[in-house]
Length: 386
View 1 (cartoon, helix red, strand yellow):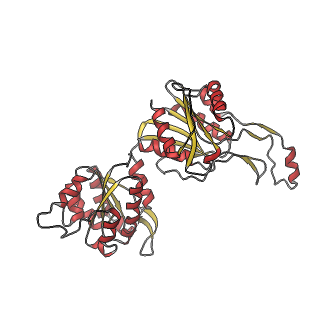
View 2: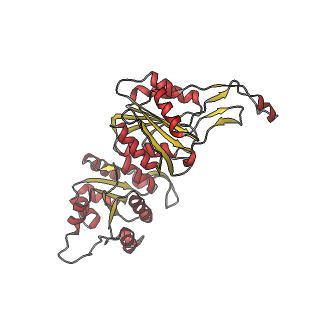
View 3: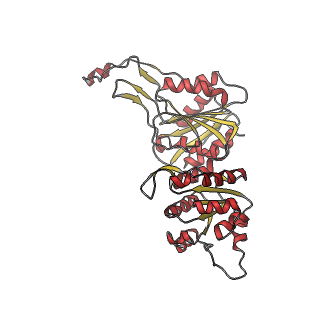
């Protein structure tokens, strides 16, 4: 689900995790959502309403706020597309499940007609109690979406389930949780490493950031995403299926195994073209010996997927060029047989922007321009669905 322009009502209940709701609010805003806040009286003992009013740039709905003619308990949920209570205490869960509206957060829960989420946060003994689990099951049966708490050290010093998830993970769950299993993206990300000996290898530059942006764009549009990952610095959302493949041989095997499931295949990984003919079982002591290293070609994953392409499948490749970028990309597009070729330059290594252009079967002309990797991903999604 794309959060751009979404109106999100953030409910905050009593608990030490209330302070993390400040970060959650900011992350949702960075993803271009509009956020308003409703709080229980107990939650204001941990973080004051003034803080959330300043962050959201809108008055916080709390008990006894507004005048006697105020209908905030109707107006706030009616304004919102999504209502998420994070953190959600055991007391508030009980109120929601019993239909009790004793304060602003539970009143808004009763009045909300749109999508509702709860993020429980409490001691693990409380979380695992029959009463809390029964209340969660009741909410699920009503269509309320429950985000499972994390497992870790709790405020009380104990360890177990009930920990408030990281705000970034909560935002990812909102944005990427809706998956249509009828549409699958298969994407390679990162780089491969072809071993020379136990400590040395042949590889390419790739942080995985472009692949990360593509994964997120397809996820937020409801696609199932299978990411075949080499080593990289980028962090992928947990909502995608990740399969590790360190070298070209293993990446090729995984891609060919998964190919039949995908409607779109994106070859985004920087795959090494060559590997040593023999891997030394121990570290090569004399580094000069590497000068005589014998090499052989690695599997051509792109060529193999094109050979095995099924009807209706779209295959996307990248052409990273350091000179004569447009001419080289056009030759590759003409000779290789992919549906979409994205030409890019080395300017984007490890950065959030890239110089790129698109070649498609409907448009063989291309111009290079600077843009964010998110913009590249948005354009790719549109081209792949054209």
